[in-house]
Image (cartoon, rainbow, N blue to C red; front, side, top):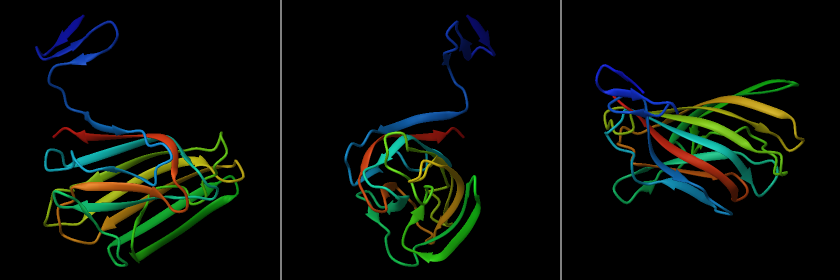
Length: 193
């Protein structure tokens, strides 16, 4: 056991206790054959940056993509109208690079465009959300997805998004474009100030 600066203790199993900066786990969802998964509590002014780590996410249908909507208010109202969001995507496969964007859309994009649904085809993605509680600026997003398309080929990407309203965001709902979320783990973290 080693103590550093009287407030950080590292033991033989590398557990960290005491006051320390870093990511704090807030919630975890494990949907099964669900149309959506959402984080409707825990997104507030406690943290300026939030992160969702989505691992081993499977769709029930082929050629799918992961989307998101922001919610506002105590009982969230989800923004889903054309013009609510802007998004930019870059996707790469062994065959090349594809780029695209939309400055007038009804949802955010977090996936790889054409996710497959075979047992060995899954999506893994990290989504960052910046300043959701700031009602004076837009909430922005950045995600780094990787997975296999419907042919089993590796696909990775970068997605940027923006909610086009100066309103505090209190929730985030995730869903596939075509099918239900068959399985996977979605974990919400906040970055300590």
